[in-house]
Amino acid sequence: MPDPTLHALAEKAGARLKSAGLLLACAESCTGGWVAQAVTAVAGSSEWFDRGFVTYSNAAKQEMLDVATETLDRFGAVSEETARSMAAGALVHSRAGMAIAITGVAGPTGGTPAKPVGMVCFAWARRNGATESRTLRLAGSREQVRRESVIAALEGLLERLDDRPFGKQTSP
Image 1 (cartoon, rainbow, N blue to C red):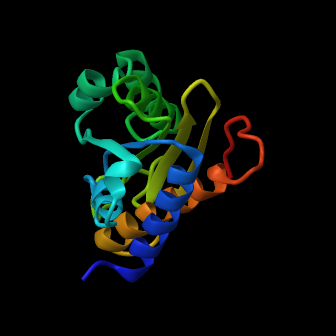
Image 2 (cartoon, rainbow, N blue to C red; image 1 turned 90 degrees about the vertical axis):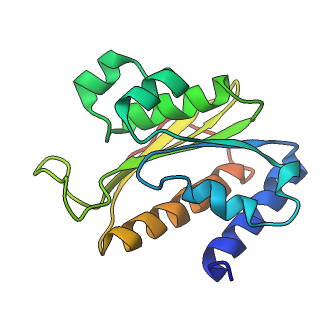
């Protein structure tokens, strides 16, 4: 049985995307395709979900999403700059009108003082529109960080599908 929270968010996002006439693409690193799994668990998702990119390695981010070597070298894989580049690449390499990107440190290892375990960067992009990004510090086990990341990504998508203007990038 699907996770009820994720399923409800995915259903709501799907209904909003469908009513807006938009397809969704996602570019995922630390979540390993969990957003794509959550949205495709919804019956009829083929009407509003185009594709997902699981780009766990830097090479995959570069090859599949055109993330620049300079971006990765300067800011690192876990950064809002990389998340924004991943979202832009997902739009370039899909038919989607909206994209979600997630990159982070799910743990339990791999964190640094500058980028601790639980630091997750998100981006939401609209074709021919703005891109917004945000960084969250999530607590818990690897599983909890990844699940909370999927929830945050879908909630962020819903916020951006509201009738408010799609503004400049934001950070906490």
